[in-house]
Amino acid sequence: MDDLFGKAIPFLELVLPGFLATFIFYWLSDSPKPGQFERVVQALIGTAIIQFVVGCVEPSAIWVGQWYSFGEWNNEVLPLCSAGLAVLMGLALAYFANNDILYTLCRKLNLTHRSADLSDWGFAHRTLKDRAIVLQLLDGRRLAGYPRSWPTNSEKGHYLMQLPTWIVDGEYVQASGIEFMLISSADVLWTEFLNKIEDESDV
Image (tube, rainbow, N blue to C red; front, side, top):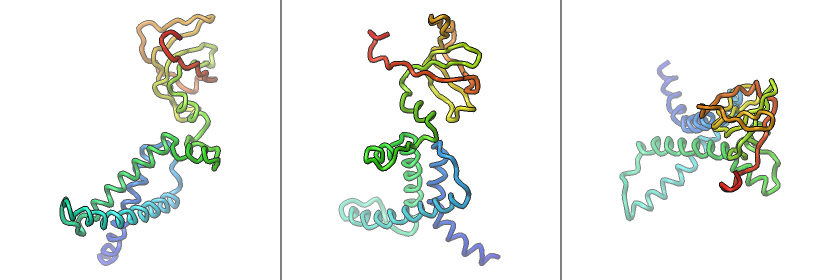
């Protein structure tokens, strides 16, 4: 048993950076978590990329060390370097996914028409996040305001509306004394995005 653990620990240390990178990515992004097998494969691919980058960092660090030294490059530095690169990789992937950067580039190159968002719902809210919206509620009421957060799923979650204003017979009636309001997405029939206000004269 001790021999088995002795063989398993070096393997776990080897693949840990990939698992750390994928953990950070799925923790910060809205991407759905795939099955366990797919996550293991992704972690192994991430580990291979990190090990490749570490292999490039080592000679670069030694070359820079001719002029300025941060310390000795040894076997104790390798795990720290791998862990640091794993964190950076996870953060970078989450940033790219949450801001649709890679898919934007691919759309410009006519490689795809997809976006990083899971649905048209998420794409609309992310790209038009600076617009005021009007929520048409199931009971016929209409609420205008600025969404400060919105559900990632159209069937569950809540809108956090700033400066909520009811629309009654075409007139805007601000909710007195209320700065924020939570509205369940289950109560929303549709969402209207208003024209963008360019300057104060347009108000």
